Length: 347
Image (cartoon, rainbow, N blue to C red):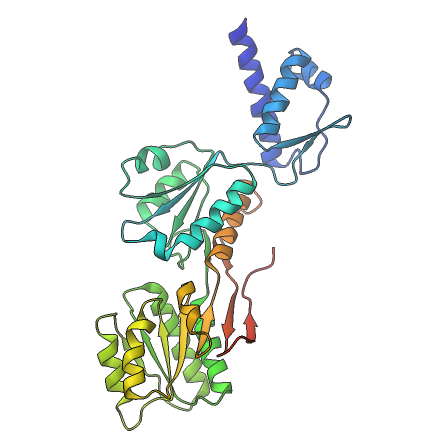
């Protein structure tokens, strides 16, 4: 008898949850009362009361004293969120902590468990690729066609964050082309008439930033782009060579959190009056804001935006391929903000 009751109890939860997920019961909708639900499912009101309590604990509905049960304005439509990082990231705490903290914040607001793991984690295949279809997955700073295919085949909602996706339908990233172009425009408006660009083009984000620089310089039609592919070991020598030239640029734009610090000694020694533009999400670089132009965005906000996109996909509110752009700002030397460029799509 108990087994039969438990089966009906589970059917109540699954049916109501499905009605919420499909929009039959939209946010704010008042559910039928316990007695009406008991009649519909052929159970006692005690069983429907228990089912409604579980739906409330899961975040799908809100129960109001003397009023009834209502679909939550933002129901919990995911059983858990798995943030997956590729094995190419050596120190996720240093480089990506703001992103996953933002994702966790969005998940915790809806009481959704959230965990971070690498693809090399022993539990990755079991927990993510073979895990429950009610989970959500965020691929952070990487994408893998095989992983994406397996997630699609199982109907698991997922999104790619931090990088510009090639394979995923749902993507959140900073438009580094536009961000870099905005930085070039701001520096030129302040009279810096010749600017060179330094980046490590093995990293896609630096490559896209270089494309934005090239486009902006071409539009100015004042000089040819000066683009240098470097890393932390080579940037000091390359900067020294460029700034020692009789036709040295008046400004440098450097992509990447660690590269500016590797370049600073060479700049100060060779041509200290050189104006500096930086592209970063690394908060430590903001210490240079009194002496450099900085194109910056907030990792935490980008992470929250990534969770929001995943949630809307899981809730069935977005069905077509969608890209959202994280907002960014251009800071001029000193405490003032000279321009705010928000590329975030309205939703």
